[in-house]
Image (tube, rainbow, N blue to C red):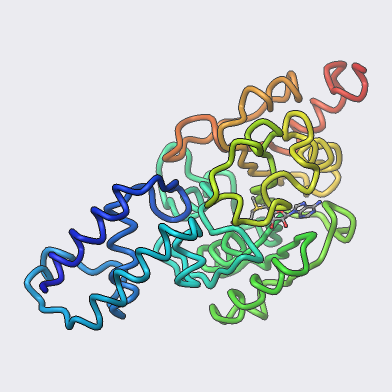
Length: 308
Ligand SMILES: C[S@@+](CC[C@H](N)C(=O)[O-])C[C@H]1O[C@@H](n2cnc3c(N)ncnc32)[C@H](O)[C@@H]1O
């Protein structure tokens, strides 16, 4: 069997199965390529057409198809099967203790230029970075790699997720520059930061109830903050925003991912002067707040606590 014949068999099996994607790949073609290349020990960015005619030994082909069948039978995300995920070309260790790295904030860290380049909001004053809700530490690691001069605090409530984070920080040789902190929200974070990155739990109750098995395999704490979806998924973000200004330096900014929840977000935080940043998910999945904007909003009669 040639490699391309094996790939086509794998792709067809995935295509025919009722699988959910979005945890490292978005379709059966890419997922088949990922699993096949990983099982054969080939680089994940290999050009399949260049390898098309390469013969694959029967036992190797069997191993690839067994992995494809495991993906279909268990509905576990591919990254939990391979124990590896890639974000912006950077490899991360991953297992069921943290979600599969896929934050849109990674795109903003990686973009060196463009209308929504994060660098436009940063400067020589940017020394201290916080990755709040760090999980697997992918954003903390990407930030430390992108900005060699910064120190990063990476905080999470889950000791299990922090164990995964520790593996990634060590594998990237960043233990001197990325500090892992167990913290419930702001609780163990007395410092002020120049840049806060946060991909928080924000999945609302109805979305939690409709999650496909692949996403149920991830820690619920990472998706709904352990609040069983709250009502609108905004409970963690309420706590976050209430104290965010106090944890930012005067020129500091908070970059917050909210996925497809802009409606819930704007209903929960009316009048909040957010700067929406474009990502591959569109113009309203990630927003940026300056400390000045947060302070202005906190003085506004529209702040939920005051309006209630
Ligand atoms: C959506 S995941 C993000 C993980 C990682 N930053 C990423 O983008 O792949 C949210 C993370 O928030 C953490 N978390 C949930 N509630 C928290 C809380 N109250 N305080 C701190 N972290 C919390 C979860 O353990 C989980 O790792």
